[in-house]
Image 1 (cartoon, rainbow over the protein chains, first blue to last red):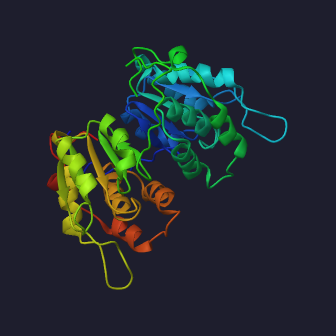
Image 2 (tube, rainbow over the protein chains, first blue to last red):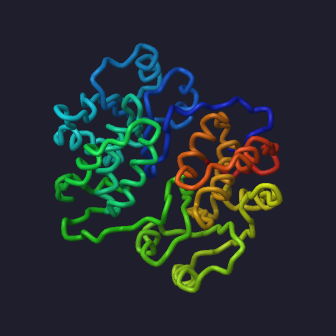
Length: 171
Length: 171
């Protein structure tokens, strides 16, 4: 689209927003200031990795934009008792990998740890080497805390491609 | 594509590899270990922001894959005498914004500063707020040095959209 110099409204991506792959985005929790930015992405799906009810302003936006929201209740890795459940990550992966759901945004609260663990698994399915996966994880987690448990989760995550990859997967 | 569990070759993205936008990638200097990864991206264009002759292994790969290479000789910002020339960045932007050239990879040496400055200008054209642009810049520069001159360059970069945006631009 041709834009004119007048169309100068500033767009505010949600915190830690990034493009993961064609049609897949990640970020921290989107607030109202980012809605015009998100609108331009024409999202079909949001995947929220968190325990809380989505706040009303976001719920309204999601309804208005006819976005399908999948909430996958995951608590972040916290030593020594809380750990990310693998079955929930697999559930989330199925949504992420299915291009029927694209464009799709994954978010949690900070956008670093749960989202980072999930994206680490996406990269693993994309066959990235662990060094590169961890380097990406660290880039996003660095302003918070780098959680070894997240990295261990990614490291040990080992799903047969057949189980989750399908003919709609194109990452 | 359906992948089988046997197709387990590890892929090694170049350092600081990331998806900038649909069809636009950024990274540090690609070496041989990343060629199979890059091959899968089906690149049409590479834009190298650097002064040196491209090393033979990369030149061979680029020729084999029939990738068009544009070299834009830019030296990184170094206080107090070297600064990124705006006309070179605009030249690079024209390649990046033109979807005829996609999929396209921009790289420099580390993939943090010159590439980061250019990508900051891309984000500016995408109307991202400066806070968000700088946050992204810092994520990539952090293992090196965060160069205020790069951030100032992005800050002061102010091109009319008409000059550079065209009907093939779709970022």
